[in-house]
Image: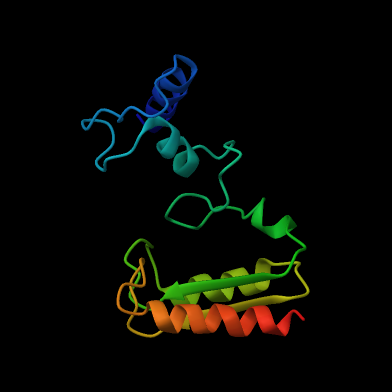
Length: 130
């Protein structure tokens, strides 16, 4: 069913319907065809992480050599296992010589209510690049 859903999304994109919603009986969340492919299709140019399970190979992420700062909220519910495990995995998979990661305590996926802390962490990291 998953491969069929990806094929349908590709058809939608090719037929000029990239920004139309995927059928709800196939995709539980409200995703356009383009957004669904960015998350689900391993061959998508947007695919950085292997869907939300994060268990597949990090074939694009592991090629990035530029400085990277990954910030995650401690209470992000979009992952199938802990944010700490994600950060550990990214730390071991990166080839960037200037990789850093930060978990914002009590923050969710959108960092709502933690925007100032997020901005401060990003600013401090940018300063380290100078």
